[in-house]
Picture 1: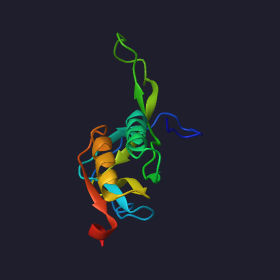
Picture 2: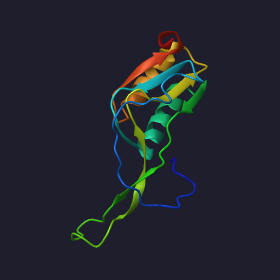
Picture 3: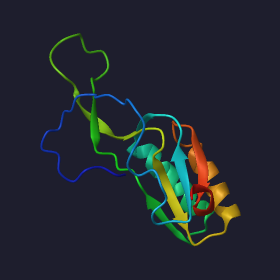
Picture 4: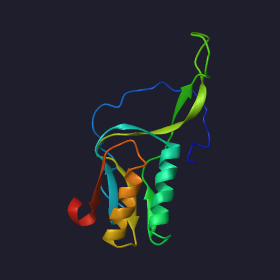
Length: 138
């Protein structure tokens, strides 16, 4: 699963997810893409599950780019622990996805295969998405 190699400050604050995305909103490398409509934290396990689904559907043909990276850590307390006693340990990493962000890009396959692969991958993610292509994004 994706996670940062180095984490100097391991415990981060939750932060805000206001506004819409201004960077990473157009297709740069691929012909087809999956664009986020809603905002959420996308866990590294969810990204990996969607990636596996896309690769399986494309039958390992074409090229895939993941345009988000889970670099924000989140903490979790163990079960049945009383209140207080500080912050919990790092439980995993998430990518903060805002509306307008391109999550995946594909190239080297037909539009039908790309549309079906990205449709199946979207079911693995906790956000609403839409299919985009180079022709429609211009």
